[in-house]
Length: 262
Image (cartoon, rainbow, N blue to C red; front, side, top):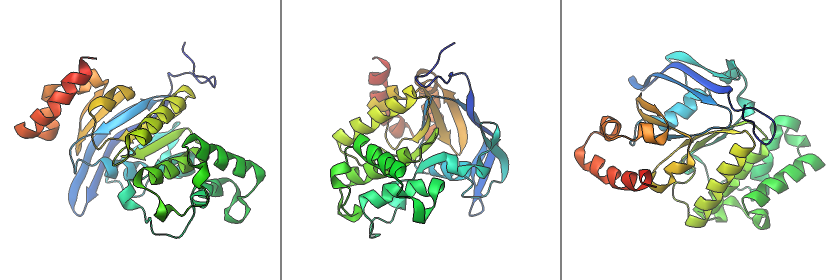
């Protein structure tokens, strides 16, 4: 039996989604979604714009009502234990003009454990410091988030997720619009978290060369087109089912062929 660095074994269902359906503004946004994610897996969600990737995250967390289905985490309803999940939304959903420093953004992660007025314990401060070091942002801890670049802002919210000390991470397009150095740093954090037995569900704005960083891919377009290894999911038939137009398919197939040849 295989084990992670922290002693957890990999053959354990961390997250299970059963018959999940969601309506949005009277229209079906997600329909009958089913999948399981095991402990220590890094799973990428791909699909065209409007496929329901962000909606899926919000549905998993209970931020929007389900039409049907259920989501369980370690065998219990996820909606009742949201504090055990780290969620990083898309950058476009965050108010970057809010007058708060980098340090305080990450410290917000500790309110779950000690409350807003008691989150400056020595342990919390050390956890926040370590999280900022991992994303190479400790030297900017006194800077306002509104003064940061897009890549730096993404690092800060990833640090906040790390400071929550949870086992499940939901990351909505964390690589969108970041510089190459930030992308490499984030992918390295994926690998570190996986080695610790953490589980990641990550939506991808663009994929190409990053496919080999995922154990499994979930191809989505309102319904689940395919779920499995990158080689199993990224077939021409599946891409056509998800993306439709031949022009879009041709644009996607070239980088895919390069990745699969590696």
